[in-house]
Image 1 (cartoon, rainbow, N blue to C red):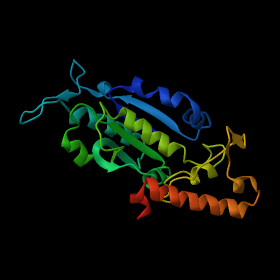
Image 2 (spheres, rainbow, N blue to C red):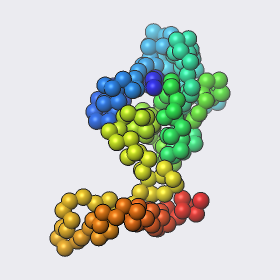
Image 3 (cartoon, helix red, strand yellow):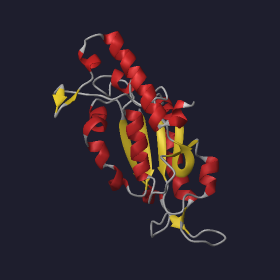
Image 4 (tube, rainbow, N blue to C red):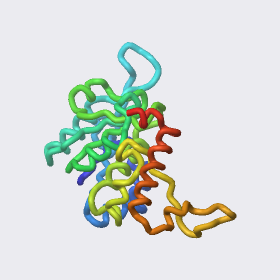
Length: 225
C-alpha cells in the first residue's frame, strides 16, 4: 500500500511513523508513506495556501489551487483508490471502514486546516470524508495519523500474529473480552479458572460470553445492533 498525505505541517506527522508497528510495516516494504507539503504547490511569493472567506466570517479557508496542483500531480503518476479528506463533519471512522481501506492499494489523505477547505475541493476531488469523532482539532494531521494506524495494522504481514487484529474490539460489533497474563494470582485477585483449564472450547465460549456482557454494559448502542 502507498499512502500520500497532503499537509501544511508534515513535520508534525512524521514521528508516529518512525516507531513500533508503523515503522516495521515500512521496513518490511508492506506500506510506503509520502508526505507532501502543500506550501510547495502555492503559486504566490508568500507560499500562502489560505485566504479569507467569501461572504465574510471568522477563520481562513484553504484555497483550491494548491490542493488541485498537488492532487493532479499525484494522479498523473499513478491511480488512486481513494482521496480522503479528514474533517469533523465526515463519516465517523469505525472498524468496518478501516477493514475496507486496508484492502486498497493507493490512497491520498488531505489534512484540513483553519476553517476547512474550499468546498469545490470536496466537490471535485474527494471520494471519502472521514472524522475520528465529534470534536474539532487544530488540523487534520493527528486525525490522519489515527486513520493510518487503524488501517496499516490490518494489512497482512504487519502484525507478527495476523489473527490478533481479527479479535480486536469492534471487528464483530463487540468489545473485546477481558485479558490476563502472569501471575495467576496478584494481591488476592485470581485469573478466572476457565482460562487456566486448557479446555479451549470452554475458553472460547467464556470469551464470547464476556464480550457480549461487556458490550451490553459499556456500549449498548453496539449491542442493540
